[in-house]
Image 1: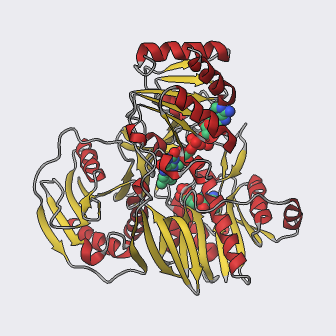
Image 2: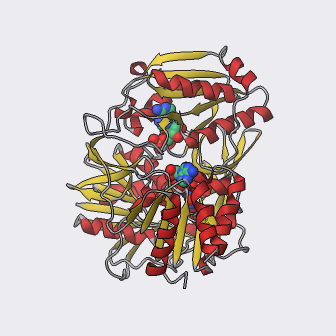
Image 3: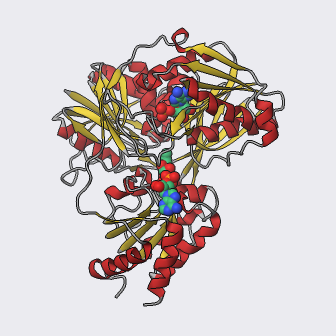
Length: 305
Length: 257
Ligand SMILES: Cc1cc2nc3c(=O)[nH]c(=O)nc-3n(C[C@H](O)[C@H](O)[C@H](O)COP(=O)(O)OP(=O)(O)OC[C@H]3O[C@@H](n4cnc5c(N)ncnc54)[C@H](O)[C@@H]3O)c2cc1C
Ligand SMILES: Nc1ncnc2c1ncn2[C@@H]1O[C@H](COP(=O)(O)O)[C@@H](O)[C@H]1O
């Protein structure tokens, strides 16, 4: 079997997810070739054949042109499997490629079981094993699900690709999130508020617990989107990554995008009314309780020590 | 200007899920149903656009069984003008390609300037439908949109990338936009608008009339993830729980020393 790995680069840097594609292909003992819209100054550590288009000409985000290039590589290499990261780049491009190929697409693969891809369902509460009916298949892989066992190495054999006509979607540039404010990464304790806090007034009780533990407070995304907490306190893929000594998740379900930002914490406590909340899968301690009663009580007991 | 919004009805994610008899989906009993969160942003964006482009006309479309009408009515009460219910009880047996095929078959030649979908559904979560609708209709598409502005046939949007970075993107209509969390603040239907919604057009089309695409995949098995061992679960009276948590933090961490 042969797999085409769609590597990713942003602003001239190869993104780490590209190496997870190699790890997955490795698990299936598949041959690989790689495709990248990037720069010859920053090649991925990969020992195989790399089809490279210049990001300076094509643009980091130009989905119709990227699709065109990928279809050219597929015509040349005839891979059975095309692998993307399940990322803002991959989930945008994969359906376009799958559609052009008439291939089945399976999104956010987290594991293989009996040789079939497994994907999460219902916010990670369930798993689904998928039977693909087409010979050609397109998968996107969940970030972090397949890790390279060794430091990636090698220098690719580069095949340069000419830029195709631009697509109908025009990329006008990046905007960086406002930086500054709190650096959650430095705190030894982070206590985060999730949607389970119910109303903005309850941010205060979470902040007080954080203070009683000598740490900072953070939040899950819905709490930030609702403007109950500033964005620079958001934990997760589109916020900050933290790895404190203690992470306390108050009313947070444990969606993969939140876990990605805190699962490296040394000790994780979750406070949740739902005993089956997916956060329980990574928590060292799951306290099944209503945070509105439990958090102030715990804070009071900590302060009274 | 005609606008199409695609919405899905999903269970509340805090439910205790059970696996159905066939072992390929969750059982539909004992669940509370609501509009897919991402689709609420799609509905709100369409309505905000109508507030700007007053002659706009919004059609909301949902594929599902009889009970999805509740969710359709919510979208009408929020401010959509008319609704299409594509009727099919066993909608969970369809793969994203087929859902997209149905939507595209309905939308073809109708002259929608913009089609809004959620970036993903909360239960199936494939994130494919919007982009596939665009492919079927050969329209340009932008996914994961967190900011949207429209002027004179041109949409200027921001895509959300990892780590809080955004990409600014321009696309001429007609186009498909998939909506990400935080795009806007979805409104709550007011009582007068709930009353008004009762008089709005709600057309039903049997899914069979629009389903022309064969599946390329199927669910072999649905199952619960294996619990990662080691985690402790505490239940009981909250005073005792708090004491127990403090004791565990003293034993297992250095933060209380
Ligand atoms: C591309 C993308 C990027 C994303 N990036 C991020 C990110 O960076 N960070 C992030 O957090 N999310 C991110 N998300 C969103 C993520 O998928 C989830 O929607 C989000 O993390 C859910 O937040 P939550 O757990 O606070 O809310 P919910 O999922 O609504 O969970 C609320 C929890 O509170 C519990 N609860 C309710 N009431 C109580 C109570 N009284 N006491 C105790 N517990 C209670 C419930 O049982 C439930 O488990 C992203 C999503 C996408 C698609
Ligand atoms: N049954 C459905 N009826 C109408 N729209 C749907 C349906 N299923 C999915 N969609 C749309 O497609 C989007 C992405 O869904 P998915 O590809 O399943 O993650 C959703 O946010 C909806 O906008």
